[in-house]
Length: 381
Ligand code: GLA
Image 1 (cartoon, helix red, strand yellow):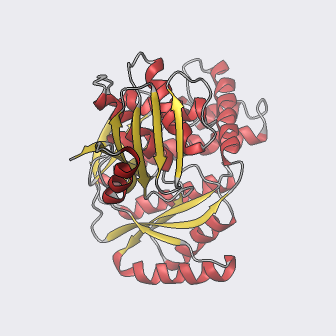
Image 2: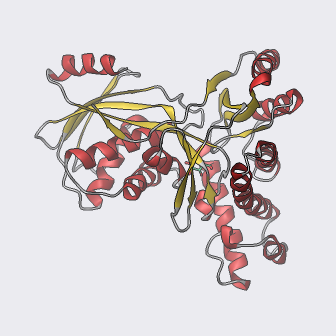
């Protein structure tokens, strides 16, 4: 990828720049908990984005997306985001840096990536954190890593219409080879967990479906949670986020909130606890419990949070039938991948069965990605 980028960069701009990269992410457990102040448990992966960048001494950004063969220019003072969605991420990052007082100038860039798009592995966070990290480095801005993640998150909020939490950008910026990270999204405390489950593998099965309106459905889930938290807060003022609530407290407001909001909150309160249970289980190397919790998450995401779909439920069922230790829909949902914790000896049979059964039902095979936990945002030498 590096040599392809570098070749194009030379052709377009006649010079050489510096290389930066960042990563997509997986999440072992803790889904839709981040914007509820709860815990998440992600890690960066070996699929990401890479960009060559050279300052151009103007006020203009000239960006080329190698995978799409598209070129966009925008001025740093422009208010209107470019039409191309990929360019909005770069534009958004620049604008968010400027909003925070960062003095930046124009640059030329060529970038490419290998995070599958729409698969729920956060290609957008990888792109945002590549550029946030690079601008911080190239203009010596002294922005700390959490703020770099927030710059990516604000880009999603303000330029891409997704009111996402902090998980993806956090994972992409803080990712460390061989480690998952448990982040408390309320206090922003985090801890690295070396993850090397002996006898098991983590594998993603990508349904290759991406449902329309995923971002508006996502934002609606968030609003449901906020309404439920506000109702509980009337009785229990200490409840800032759903993460602070107990199931009994949710029950007290059952008749006040809609059935839908109740189900959403029920899922979230359960999921926050499941992350803690998984952490405990991991400390004992108890992968059976980890897997059981993953299935519970899938069930909750499907029945209560309603962010699964036919294809993902099907993949989850196959995993169960094959005796896979844990399986669930990963990320925001509405398409994308399942993440599966599989015993080594079951791996081949599971993949083979899942491919054949899925193809028979949906006409195409799922894609298979082995998870390699890797470093997040960085400068390449
Ligand atoms: C998307 C969002 C994250 C998080 C997940 C669900 O990936 O960007 O902030 O909410 O969905 O866990």
